[in-house]
Length: 196
Image (cartoon, rainbow, N blue to C red; front, side, top):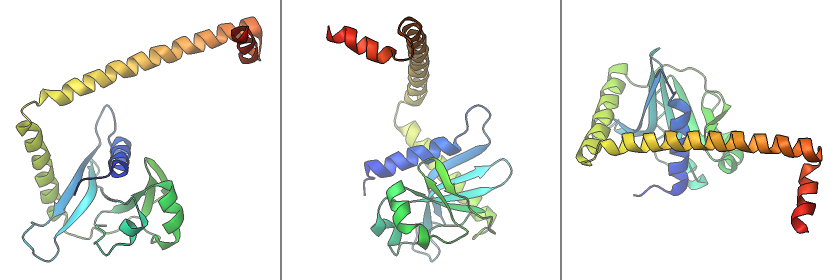
């Protein structure tokens, strides 16, 4: 089933929150399968799982609707710290239903801290699942026949970010000049000149 735009947005926000820039200390993967998909009991999928350099596992369940939140599908809270990733509207509807040890992110903002738990499965099971998910993602990228696309996209994003910073600085300089010429109410004065 294809993911909704809202699900993709929440995925992007939680990934950017846990994907530290520079020296990497937390590693995350989407759709990490615990066990093998052979129908055995205990098979489950974690929406997003991270592992950090201190050996801490964090599991995230991404929910975008009330029916999704209340569905009978298993909540894969297997980490030391476990979280829901919700929209603000959904959080307001379900906040009283969230167990005290489960944390909550609204997009990339933590609004409720998780309490540390013992791992729900053996750590080696998590490590194996994490490796399989990483290998799956690497294989997808390799088979896309254009592994350089990601690096090219990142380069373009950095270029756009730099252009945005320059434009922001230019705007601040212009606003300073306008304040100096027209005073605090420079926007009103500018509107008068434009309407003439």
